[in-house]
Length: 278
Image (cartoon, rainbow, N blue to C red):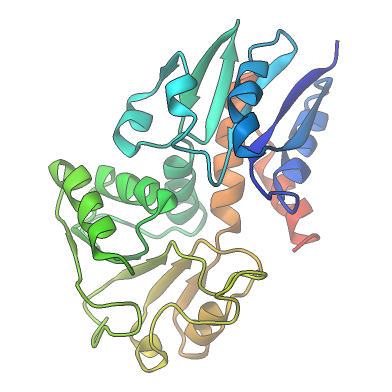
């Protein structure tokens, strides 16, 4: 019996996840196929119910359904409870369990692969969407000094502050993206917005003012298409460290793979195959 696993989202035909997950399945000789399950909102509940079938390992969940699927799960991790988002569903004999590997995937990429310490660092997070919640959770759990959020909608940023204030020092900056006057106090800046993303309304644009780019020591951009975003190009001109989101994509995917199979993902091979595609 061929097993199934896939990614659930809306307008996700360009997802890179099948490339790396099918490589991992093939590496371990697992008779399974990782598919794109592009799902309109009215069909979401039925798609989740189909995950309970005997031949389904589970699924990844992406935009815009990471929060919406939670009520249909039988159980979920403490991490999901705190973050409020699921990106991995595991089928446990017809019982669906939710996990969030985004947070741990980000931390693994930043600290293990790039050897950047979070401890006692002052960090600026751009954006207050679902991905930023997972990032902020990981940062606070790994002993950063402080987190400051800038978001277009101040209320969303304040909601996140209220959500995570029990875990550490977190606050908002009232200025909009194009208005901060000084970024020199931040050790790391993390872009959780779509600024610079290919095929988006913000393609080609910088998430911070041009004149402040030279103040950035370390800039982590969750965007990975294009591999070198406009902001990373500018950061590198001034000798700063610029990192794209491909590592987080691979690390979170590897953690999902292990949850479904119990096997170690071939991380280096996953990097290699994506380097040829991006």
